[in-house]
Amino acid sequence: MKGFHWKRWLFGILLIVVIGALADLLGWNLRGWFKELWDTLTTISIGYVIGACVLLIVQTTTTAYAWFSILRYGYPDAGVRWREVWAAYAASVALNGILPANLGTLMMLLMFTTFIAGATFAGVIGGYAVEKIFFTLIGAFVYLYLFLTVGGSFDIKFNFVHAHPWATAIVLIGGALLIWWVMRLLWPRVVKWWDQAKQGGRILVHPGAYFGRVFFPSFLSWVAMLGVMAIFLAAYNIPVSFHTLMRVVGGNSIANVTSVTPGGVGVTQAFNVASLKGITSSANATAYSIAQQLVTTSWNILFGIVLMAWAFGWSGGKRLVTKSYTDAKAKEAEQSAARRAKKQAKEDAKAAG
Image 1 (cartoon, rainbow, N blue to C red):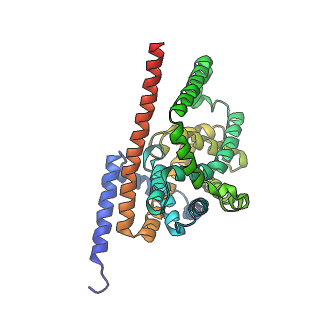
Image 2: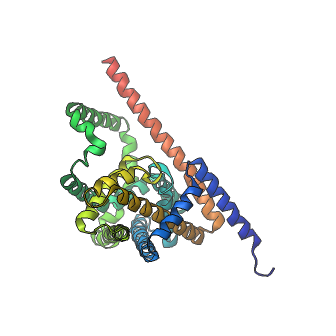
Image 3: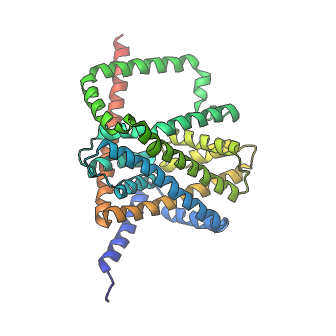
């Protein structure tokens, strides 16, 4: 039939099968997930879902623009293209929803080194540090707000600190000394890495460009994220206020840092229930949390797939994601081995002393 591209249809079907197989390997019940998603979409008004998806596009696009600016200033002769950076960042957001321990972010960094000429991993890490300046500052503010206003939130994950203050101090001091010792051993390499990292963070030399092209877009992304939360809170008749939003944002931030489950599933719900205690019932807080996570994850996956196909083509996008995933797993294993070696060295030193 004229105009019927059977190869594209076949590839699309194959892609769905591969996604299903990957989900099964990761322990993600795809059928149950779709059922939950459908139940969620039919429970709340479609207007809330559409509004949230629009703000999710704003959130992803503004942060991607910050990345684009960082990379353009870091590698001015590499011909960094907006479409590719946008697609890679959208893919990382989608993958962080289904992969554990923010593996999607590591994949994005490796993607940048693949399609940006001259980009090194250390240089991209330098850019990552620059991109995180705003989010670190705003995150510190939110954490402080949460700890000061939500009783017991610190004890949800960190009650060990209260029960064993001296042990905590010894661990922190010992860890600092170990880092200092390792830095001395690796100093020649650190100098080389620092030079590469400075290249990735070169936009900081231009304060006007940094605040206009990185800091401000990051602020817009954060406001859009608050808007997404406000929409879902309103959908479940939970009072929306600055106080409520800060409680939820703080809980989500801690859940993201402390969880190794894909997308922080389970941990996020626990923190949302704790953050919304006294504002709504535990059942309603859980329903809100699950709905928000299901809808945002679904939309981010769809948006990421569309942008990757647009920027790199179906086959090119698939190859890039597959290669980045393999490299990210290898890099993660390498880092885990290094941490185990440091721990073993510390134990050997303690035994020898």
